[in-house]
Image (cartoon, rainbow, N blue to C red; front, side, top):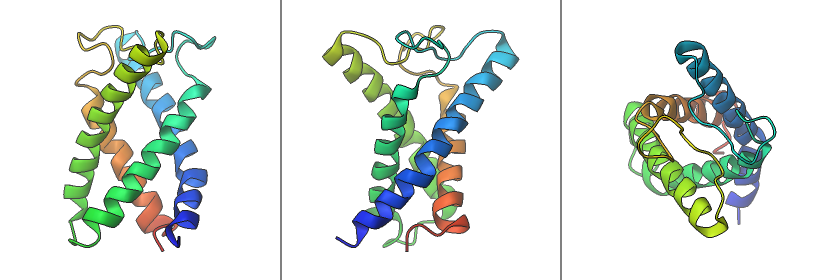
Length: 146
């Protein structure tokens, strides 16, 4: 029960920041390539969607669980944490896109120029940035794990 307030604080603080970071990453991808990395077919804005805020909240909860169950008890190093969370994020993003599409029949997001449709290899460094942001925000900046 002591973890519920911690998770709620992280969802309230970190999830919107990671969502904004996702928008920033998509915008940078557009500036670098001239096309959006991923699009949101059901969103009127095309390059971002408020609907993904719930995904970021769930992502923060999953990362919190991994930190509490795996990283903190084993004294896992920061770089190892970032590498693992980044790769885990790529896998979860693909699974999220796949499941959303196959359950609802529509796409939440699509990587238009990728052969994988729900993810691309360029997402790996982006997820490492997301993992580093999570670590910095939760452990170093506001110490939301305590």
